[in-house]
Image (cartoon, rainbow, N blue to C red; front, top):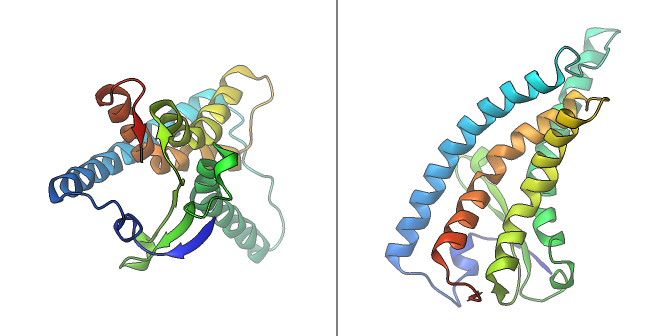
Length: 193
């Protein structure tokens, strides 16, 4: 596995995509971004319904700076897990591919800086099922599992787990959309690059 600072299109230079495909990818990214935002709203309402009345707020006491530090630590943890952890889960979906030289964990620096992206590229050819599994694994692990825990367990997860699950809805929107497209438009038994 290699660590890169690059854009997805630069890493795909060996297998360039056409302008039409690049435009379709851009449209899919924009649509899935909107779906992700709406999904976060629905996820927040659903999470509140599932865990109410104990929404998992930590019992904070002490000076205001301690409360502020605790809140900032929670926010940093949520951001780290829903960006880096999400992408590491893509890699863990097919652990045998992690050590390949054509597997990447990359940072795509963009302007403004807050819109920079972490992404992965799993090396080698993948079957249709492998591609869908790689794409959906972080969604299943970081969103579906905590929501199932909240829905079916007598002990409810805390707020940090809920925030990670809700933020991962946004992080997974593109993955779910591309999995759906591949599932519907790719013939069975296809091999993907």
